[in-house]
Image 1 (cartoon, rainbow, N blue to C red):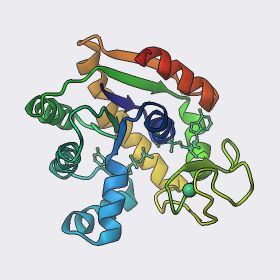
Image 2: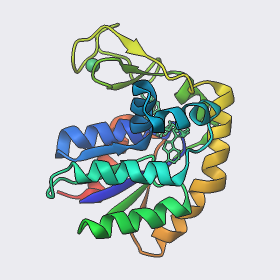
Image 3: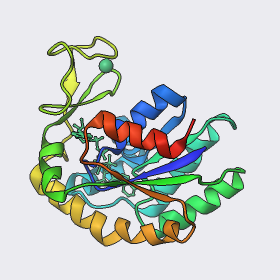
Image 4: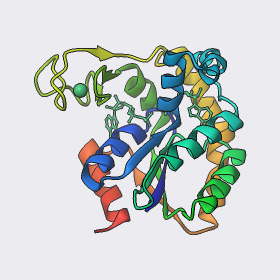
Length: 215
Ligand code: ADP
Ligand code: ADP
Ligand code: ZN
């Protein structure tokens, strides 16, 4: 099974992808995570992407589609893919079709996380992750069970993203509205879109997605 989680920054794509990975053994393919790794490693891709990401604008379609192709090539044929934060433009949606077809895969579901934009700034400015395992948290909505200790790996180091500030979030939301939301009709025409209420509690969103994906 191959699915896309679609929604604006802070909608809960990464949170839900991490749960699907644990519950269903699927793989999360987050272009944001791949780009941040490239920036950290100082690769040519990272050098090109860094300033663009800091501004909250979109990195080029060629760069992100190449990352996705490489990541799929590293996966087992039986492993399902969760596309998180990709595709983000019509050109990326077209590229994904080709990338999947070339590898004998197809898209089963596009889950649209429907959220109230007014609340996204709070979601994003309160977001942090475990520096060791990457598990996502929130200052108000998803704190570690024991303060300061990661639920998953026990690490006591956490980090925040430099682009998770109000100014950049506004740019990212504008990019979403202008370039990403318009790709939904492509998938609606194929009858594979399900809209899920992303404002519900994290566990309820997970249950709604499980219902869509089935057994
Ligand atoms: P995205 O990957 O779509 O940008 P995240 O999954 O990182 O979004 O979620 C953004 C922040 O909001 C995180 O700190 C996360 O813990 C929190 N969050 C995610 N889903 C919910 C939800 N349904 N209700 C409240 N907070 C949430
Ligand atoms: P979020 O879901 O919280 O908005 P991501 O981690 O998905 O954040 O993306 C962070 C940044 O990485 C984006 O603002 C953009 O600069 C870049 N990026 C990630 N995925 C893509 C993509 N598919 N196309 C272009 N740029 C991307
Ligand atoms: Zn951890």
